[in-house]
Image (tube, rainbow over all chains, first blue to last red):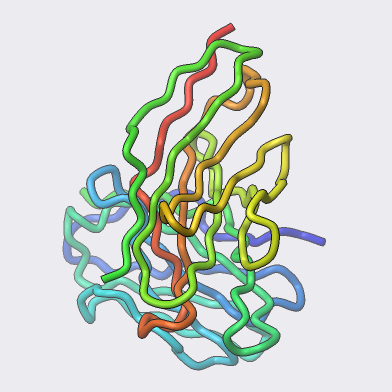
Length: 116
Length: 116
């Protein structure tokens, strides 16, 4: 089975621009979560989608948004980029077959976003 | 509030010696615990998890972890370290019974350095 794929792998933007990152989960996985990783804050949860619905959201401003499509692929968008948004953005997928069961999350390689 | 602590920023071990990477947690409800490893410029790779059952959990690449409920710890161990084990290790907890709806909370990470 192919793993979680994320595109693009690297991205350079300037302040004020917006960016869209894409994630394709492992085949059959219906839950997709996004995390931001920075040297200062570590790994922080952004949001989780399941069956095209946002199920959970971390403590990030509204500039961060996402969506999930019917094929479980997910995108996240960051508008009005700030220097502090420079980070590795990681996507993770899990089967989430049964509610409440702690399915293992499998991570993609990440998208390295640099904001200049 | 839920939290995960990895008290050591870095652990140095000689190749062939046993290694331990420490993790303690604080959650409401039952903890579901995970270890991930991250190599430079890569995403997170799943190593092992504790859901229920035996307190000693065996995972990938010869790693194991011991769940200790009274000490709220989940230390990662390996009997004989390899140079290739050098990487960043993250402990994470997924709270099912609390109000966070199951998202992963990560520790700050511990850098493991194995010298030949």
